[in-house]
Figure 1 (cartoon, rainbow, N blue to C red):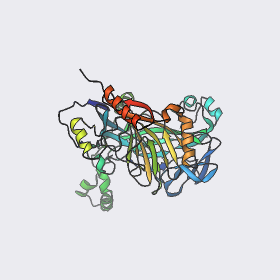
Figure 2 (cartoon, one colour):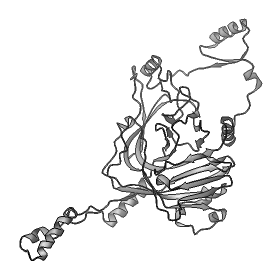
Figure 3 (cartoon, rainbow, N blue to C red):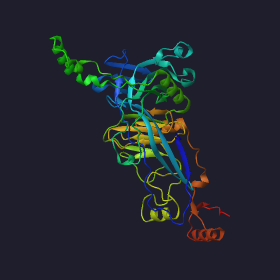
Figure 4 (spheres, rainbow, N blue to C red):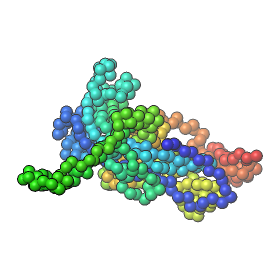
Length: 457
């Protein structure tokens, strides 16, 4: 299996003016199973000094994060009874042409969409210094993962798994071209979710996925289907009705078919050496009337509810779906027209009309799936997710907290805001001609910006 394939598209004299949208992994959703014996029906866990996570067992179980100053407003909540961590192994094909990209999801080899919660607990500072960790900590490097954290930190761990023969999620238009392998063994893996306070208005989260483990379940003996009939026939036998009746009541010569322990160890060893999850999904609740804003420099929409928003730096496109400009651009250069989502400067950050906000850290390709009205799913091309959840009471306050963490641009110099910055092309003589014309009308000019393309030999 080659999980990533990159194709350099060569230009033709005439290209497809209507390139099809790349196939994408659909929304993945499974069930949540609580296996932890320490969870009560309702419980509160501290995260640092300013945040808390609340657990409620109603409707299959739900986790919610609150800021202590606003105990009635949840900053992040899971969907009751549904998994909030899932993962998959899928193939990816990337087409590139002159800075325009198409990221295509290919065959899906297996999906772990169900989730268990086996351990949830608070980690204090002294826990990160000891070596004999509880079972829920296994697989974590606490000194590295909790570096700079404000204690106490919350840890949730368990397994993600798939027990169904058919791993294909519900059909959506966007995944018609994706093939889901069905003849795969049961797959499971451990996961860890860490929540830690970064400061009084930001809480960090980290999702880590372990190596997949495979298991081929035993095939049941077909004699179980006739258990009731056999019981009745035995009654006749006990009444000394013998002879050909015994033919029906004797145990059938079926044996259970299963993978030997040695073969299973070889399969898991091969998986540990060559296969790891390359899709991780983080799923949580949203309100039906909640509006989503942000995602960096965007040109076609303000509200992204109902859309799949990819975060990928590329050429923004000429036309971006508006016709006939996009048609003409695509015709002369493959995918040069772009679409509503292509942009020079995307950002994995949003804020909502309910004053909820989240952003991702890292450089992996990500997609924010907002197509379902009452839930959000972040899909990461990798085996981990890391980011922060923001607390704020207004858009200005949220942006201030966000830029305070990632950095703010320096103040612009006075000259650049004292007049127009004129963008043009055409060479020196054309620029001087335009400049003379603008000076004639006393237009204040700060600078000229020239787009000069290199001419290939």
